Amino acid sequence: MPKFKGKTKPNLHKPSMETVMRWMVTFLLGFVVLLPVFAGVTQYEQNRAKADVEDVLAFMQTSCRKYDNYRLANTTEALQDILTKVKTLTAYRYEEEDALLNENRLQHYAKFQYLTGIFVLDENFSVLAHYDKAGKDESLLLSQIIGDKNATDILNYPQKTYADQICLNDNTYNYAISARQDKPGLVICYTDITRFQNDKNELSLSNMLDAEMFRQDVTVVITDGMRVISTNCEQLENILVQYYPIADVLVGGEQLTPDTLLQLKNDSDTWYGMFTQYRDYYLYAFFPSRVVYASRRG
Image (tube, rainbow, N blue to C red):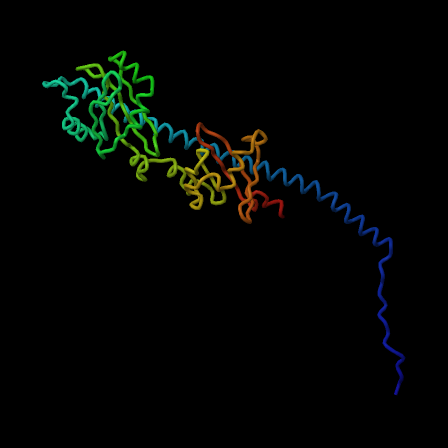
């Protein structure tokens, strides 16, 4: 039998130093070339994202403007209506003296005119008669109304009248003031319109920003600085701003401007967007990073 001295070791070809240097130079050249390309694509993606966000914010501002115009028109009409009611109540010539102090008469008039309540005051702003549909005291409401200088002006110039809207303890009231014609004093009519403002059948800022109006990959948020009042994301509806990352935008100080492309991290997701302010509203629009940097990944 033939004898074998042992297994033959494979002859491994070791790359020469010249080849190793060539690989290193190629790698470095590739890195030098790709780095500016990567930076250029990143800048391009950010500029495109800013343009897209600006378009969304412009649409949101238009929606807010339409809502404000609608609300202003409704408020003006409602205030004119309650002003007419208080003027009718004070201008009517009653046969009996101190007719305005008759609670039954006030109750009948309030129900007939769909008023929440009526105050009758003397020249010192003391309450002589009061009717409220729910039986509430409403002294805080009265103090807010007569604390306005317009109440004093009407007392001094009885030909004047005044109507306005006031928010108090999460309730909203329309009220009107007119001078008494029988004796010195004031008559105040008021209507609690809170439930009408919360009526989902009414046009609101929330249903003006319907989810179908926007691309599916963008999240829009409108806040009043404290609470999210409108958004196309159900998970964010009616939450406090302090529990959402956009709180950092509001407290960011002077370094943040409406032209800044912001980065927000929420759980495992990263979002990029911008914000702007329209009157008392803060408007935000954000795209997920996978959308913003889609081309850069390629």
